[in-house]
Image 1: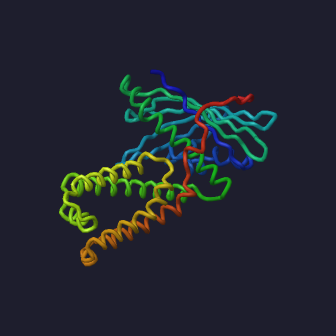
Image 2: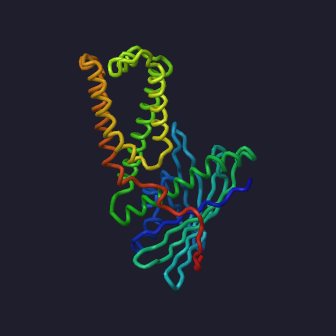
Image 3: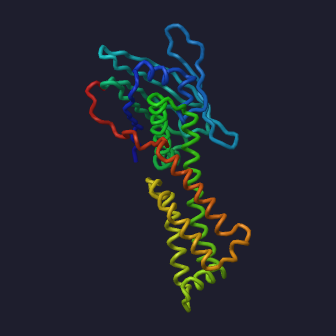
Length: 304
């Protein structure tokens, strides 16, 4: 299976010179581009491309370091600009071996259409190609698109990339937290252990002879809701639903057994904490950068 080049495009309402500086100055570039932890220009030799080194931290004290060359730039009469790049790394740890790409800046009204296309060769033979096509290439394409949206918000609204990434990762941390909580509470106390307090709570509320099937059904629904936190894109809808759900769950538990108020980590304190986290997530949700704001397939640009 042949891989396709990575393509990302986004409209940015900013002066083309500001966009050029933010993407060509290494100290500015490394602030918004999630793919790089640092970029360092090397002393430029006369009549030679601008060379640089880059570093990408991948966690656990590991980093990928590589080289790059700005092999050329072109300014057209209509003020559209192109910057071409040759990059690679000698580290055997890297999935990328060597690649080429370009950035294109196309004036459109009061803004600029900013786009990139790049491709690369991979290490590790057939296994590396398989991993690249199904894991790494979608991930690096997503990181490129997210970075472009961060750049757009930075130039249009003035919010620093650092604060945007703090909001982005905090928002997703909240999403993973709720996914874990709903899946765990649906699976462990209701399906795996069938905890006596779960049975007693349903008995108190409904006074049924056999509540096993109902508890199991609730468990399955909670697991499904937890899965939605991982799969459903519009998480703001889930947050709004939780604003209703947590007060209902709290009231139901206390009506079933008022003595729960004296327990450690009781339904009142637990659900109030989750309610507050839900409110925080809802307040953050409108300003979270997203890769979905970018176009990921090449369109028809006459000047490309």
